[in-house]
Amino acid sequence: MDDHQTLVDLLRLALSAESDIDVVGTAGTSGEGLYLVEQTRPDLVLMDFGLPDKDGVTTAAEVLRRQPATRVVMLTATHDGSLISRAAAAGVCGFVAKTGAFGEVLSAIRTARTGSMVIDPTVLARLVPSQRNSAESDGDRMVAPLLTPREQEVLGLLGAGMDARAIARTLSISLHTCRGYVKSVLAKLDCHSQLEAVVAAGRLGLLPHPVERR
Image (cartoon, rainbow, N blue to C red):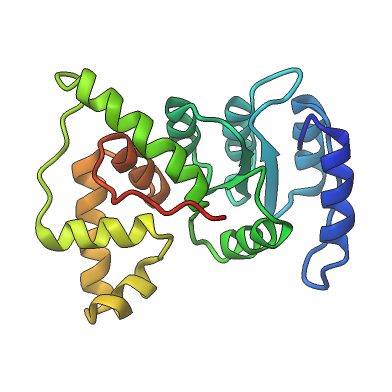
C-alpha cells in the first residue's frame, strides 16, 4: 500500500516478474488496503508510512490484528525515530528505504517471508545519530540498560540484520545459547521483537554507527 501511484505501479510490475512472488493486489489508501488484506490474506504486505486517509503505523497494527500471520515491511523516507519505534512495537518486521534500489526491496521481501527481521542500513543510519543526540539531551528519560559483553555482541549482530542462526554461527555458539542471549537482550530493552530491540538500541546509542550505502 502506497500513496504514490507511480511507485506502486512500478513495484507491482517488477515484483510480478519474479517467479517466486505473486502480487495479489495494490491499494492507495488504508481502507482499500485493509479490505484487500481481508479478502486475500497475503503472506506479506509492503506498505508506505504515509497514506492519505490514515498513517501507515496505525494501518500496520490493524493488519496484524486482523491477520497475525501476515508480515509487514514498511517503505520509509522518514527521519522520525519515534515513528519507526512505534512501527516496530506494532509488529512491523522490516524497514526499507524508499530511495533504495529495487534489489534491496526484493531482498527485504524474501528475507521477511522467512520470518527474519529486515532493517535497511540507511534507515538505521538516519535513526541512530538523531536519537543519540536526543538521548544526550534527555538523559534522565532514556537510560540504557547494562548489557554483558556477549549481549552487546549479539545486539550488534542483530543490528547488522542477522537472525539467531546466523549470529550463532558467527559467534560459534549453539542456537539454544544464542536464543538465550537474544531473549535476555529483549528483556533488558523491554522489547517484544528483535526488530523492536534494534530500533530501541539505536535510540539509546547502543549500536555502532551503520555505514551508509552509496
